[in-house]
Length: 334
Image 1 (cartoon, rainbow, N blue to C red):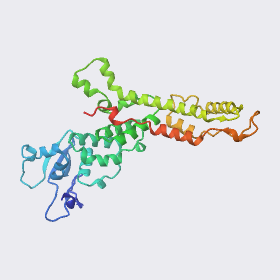
Image 2 (image 1 turned 90 degrees about the vertical axis):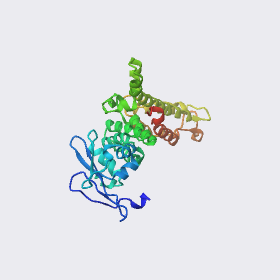
Image 3 (image 1 turned 90 degrees about the horizontal axis):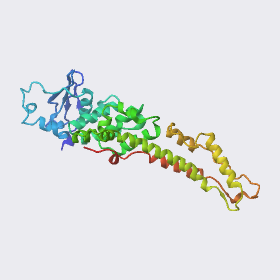
Image 4 (image 1 turned 30 degrees about the horizontal axis):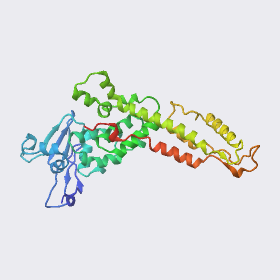
């Protein structure tokens, strides 16, 4: 019945970055009974051992009777648990989530903070407890640059969030300009989304295996090239709708005018150096050609069938929405 004793108040201990959790019931007090001493600066974060043990198997083992951290103390102060290798901000965010105090976070976590949360959640095996909050925070529109999208991809893969992974990878495909090799600068990107783990486990040093570390970057580039080809295809295939049942020269005139229009707006062909989002936006805004123009041979425009602008834009939207990468197809979850 832990739901009936969910946290109702939070009381500061007089030190920065500390939490004291009190139960709303008088017979079962969930007061913070341990202090996590985190990082080189030894930031002290108070927490409730029952909640940590329910959320994390490593903490459950660590705070059990078989480890030093689980041995009782004199009870005058909370037992200190040193976590020197972890980031204080990540542990504090993890504790806020586990202790149902997300509103204690003063701002929406940035991409790097969500990434750090993913790292400690994976380390302490509490992914299931923190994934729901992470899913609400991982959104490609909140990323300021390609590096932050890279952090989002790592986080989505660790938290096993396929929908978030797809949306972030789609943003990389249609919005990134230039080589994806810049993602190498994102700490842990190649290790998490490449084949570095396999190479280390198999002790493989052949260049063929080292090249596989970059397989995800290759997949991104292949997807971008595929989307670019689909856009070119849609812009040209739509011309098949131009016709006149009287077989006049109106169709030829329309085709010529359409190709001239594509050339005027730099869409013939779609250049590889431009962001695909700009290309799709410009293609969707392309004006429909005048289907009522009369030809020299056909005296009635009712036989003329012009470009279907709505169908073309629908097809371009479909191409854009299918430009993401699936989590299960892209990485090996170890």
